[in-house]
Structures are given as C-alpha cells and as structure tokens.
Length: 403
Image (cartoon, rainbow, N blue to C red; front, side):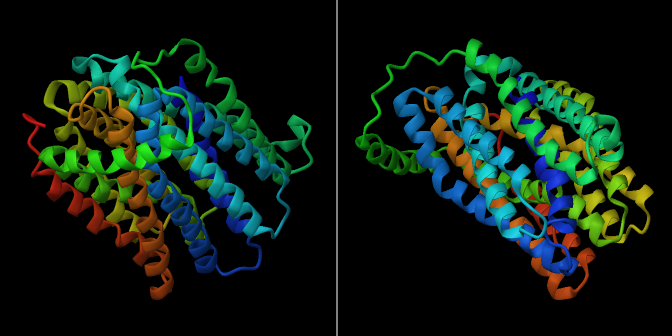
C-alpha cells in the first residue's frame, strides 16, 4: 500500500503536472530549452543530495533498527513540501523548483527504507512477485488519482474550481493527502525485524559513517552485487530521465498538454498488469531475463522518440513504456534483494538508491545540455541510448548463481 500511496507523487508531480506547470506557468515567457535546463538542473541537484545522504541514512536506520520510522519521517517531509506547491504563484519558478526539490528528497529518502523492508515481508522464492505487486499497485493508485486530476483540469467548473490553474494547484494538495492516508496501513501493520534498536544520539551518525566504509568494502567483495549496481546505475539513469522529462520533451515538440497527460494515463494503466506479468516472468525465467526484455523496449522507445512527429506516436510510446517500466524497476529491486546479507538491508539498499539517484543527476542534465547545445530536444533524448546499451552490456557480467 505504500507503493499505492507514494506513486501519486511519482505520477502526478514528477512525471505529470509539475513539468507541465513548471514550463507553462512558473516559466512563462522563457525559451523551451531554458525551462528544460532548469527542470533538469532541479532534478539533478535534488538527486545529488540523496546520493550524499543515502548510504549514511541506510547505515543509521539499520543501527537504530528504525527503518519504518525513518521512512515515515522522510515521507512526512515530502508530503509537506508537496502541499506547499499549492501556494506558488505564476512566474515563481525558483520557489517552485525549491519546493519540488525538497519534496523529491522526501520521496526518494523514504524509498530507501521502504525498499529495505522487502526481504522482511517476502520469502526469497516470492520476492519477484512481491516486488512486482508493489509496483503494479503503485501504477494503479497513481493512475486513479491522475485520472481524477485530469478530469478536474479539463472540467474545473464541475468540481467548483475557477479554472485549470486552480485544478492543477489542488492536485498537488490531493497528492499530499493521498500519500498521507495510504501510508497508514504501513504504519499500523508492517513490523520491524527484532534487532535490538539503539537510542538516537549524535554518536549514531559517526557510527553510520563508519559502517558506510565497512559496507562499501563488503559490497565490493560481493562481486555480482557490485557489478549489478554499476549496471543498474547506467540503465536506471535512462529510465528515470524518461519518467521525469517525457512531458517536458513533448511540450518542446509542440504537442498539446492534454494529449501528453492522456499519454501518461496510458502508461499508468498499462503498467498495472504489465508489472504483475513481469513478476511472473521473473519467477519463471529469472529477473535478469525480464530486465533485458524491458531494456530492449526502452532502446526502441528512445530511437522512435527521437524521430516522432505526431502525438499518436507519443501514445504508442507511452503504452510501450507502460509495458516495461514497472518490470525493470521491480525486477531490479528483487534481483538485488537476493544478493545482500539479511539484517543490513537498509545499508545495502542505501547504496542501491545512491546509484539510482546518482544516475538521476546525470540523465536529466545530459538530456537538457545536449538538447540545449544542439538547439534540438531530439538530440537530447537520443543521448539516452548509451545508458540503456551500456547498462545491458554490464548486466551480462552478473552471475545469478552466486552473490
């Protein structure tokens, strides 16, 4: 249910209304390449902070035995920052970027501890299906709230709203409420593994830094886990960049904003059953095989995306991304969960999230800078090919029969 809760932020804020509103409302009168660069820079700076924090936070959470508590702390921070977007006025792009960046830190930070609970709520034999179930519910929950938000933006009068702007602003508040309400099942029913939690003191953070180096040394000894993280770093860079920049890219090509949001809805509702199918596929053929299927889809999407001319092509690409996105995310998480030692999951998932967020620093910045230098957004999206191909080649070196 936490996937259901926080996926509203991923769908409506990260992928949907924020980039749309950022370009058309908070960056009025600015060149499309300039607003794309600002959005990419915001994503990159927020991700850099998570990169610096993630391993320490993971080590501290394991030491304290309070993974769930730290999850909720970061979630609460993200919820408050998201609701603050309601108050940002037209043209205030810097304030919007600040609140969005802080909300992104809350969202990403909470996911470190959420992922670390996976080995404790699922048997090893079921971990692919469990991970996929979470992502599939996230697609469904995020899609339902996005559908409501889209209806409000198209028919604001029906909902007692003045105009589309008011509808989008209200959507940010609804995301915060949704995130809060559907986090309650996790609060009430998920139990921490009993590992003798320590008290919170300043010493905890010095212990955390010490354990980072121990974990870094250990993870480098786990050859397959280390190679997998490098591969993940590359290909998830491309995945996250497409999630964060797709609507902005469509706007840069001159596509209608309502058509772009419809494409996002297609992705969400395609992703719900597709993630479940990938979970079944991973259980039968192994998670790596499923990841390669998804990578092939992303390569084709990137090439077609650089050449497309019509909005109907954007719909086809949205459907294709929906087929692959949940699969590559869920199977990557479950594949890594098999490789790490029990009892130190938050530390190891801290590095997992660090690699993911470090990738998110480079991807949006790469797409924004290449597009700006070429004065052509198509060149920016084509640059993502190197990430998918490089990650796939690195993944070939991972042996699935040993850590």
